[in-house]
Image (cartoon, rainbow, N blue to C red; front, side):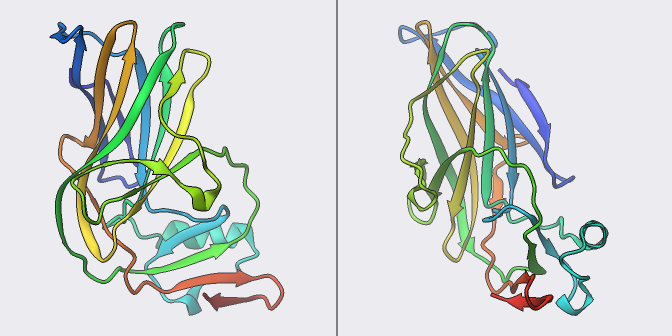
Amino acid sequence: MDGVRNETNSQPSVVIQVRDLLTSQGGLALPAEPPPLAVTPSVKWAKERYGMHAVVNTSIDKAPDGGLLKEMIGFLHHNEVVTPPDNTRLTLLVEGTREQAVLLTDLVFAVRARRPAAPASGIEVFSAQLFHKVEPKWFYADLTRQDRVPVRPNSARGERGEFPYSVHVREPEHFAVDLELGDQEVEWVAELHWTCAGRSGALEISNQGAPFVSRPALGRPRYDWDFNTHQWRRV
């Protein structure tokens, strides 16, 4: 069933579509019926740290004092790169729509195409301003070789939990998946598999039915604001 939920990405040219791939019970296909889940996805470039963090399309000598919040907000607003997006992280907020628990059995990436990646555009800047953050369950998916890739716990972020997880109307889950691309540009869709009360299905997460395109940050300079020297420092 199409149109379970559409969400607009932070990149204005991308609309994320979630659709029901398959719903079955006892091996038999069921009539169209909404799955017992609400999924709010977001696809963006991976921000490894929390703070004022962005890719901009200008040179570092035009960046303001990284410790000045108002100036940095204005700088990022006028210079942040929005196309082409890197799409190197998928985040999902998954909510049950009923009291009965829904078991999330797996999250799988299906690779549709790979090709050599071009050098990345822009520069990456980071200033450690303080922001409230909600910590998700961290996973990663290596999309460099296999065409169907189940996610794995991201041990680099201290994550040890594995699927399955369960959700219901008062207990959602928040997942973040970092994508390993190597030196390739990769096209993919994701599938969230679930089961509940004898029914099972999969929700496909795509770019309006087409694959997402993820690009590695090849050759992109990275700069941190140094609060001791009050200068931008390449890292």
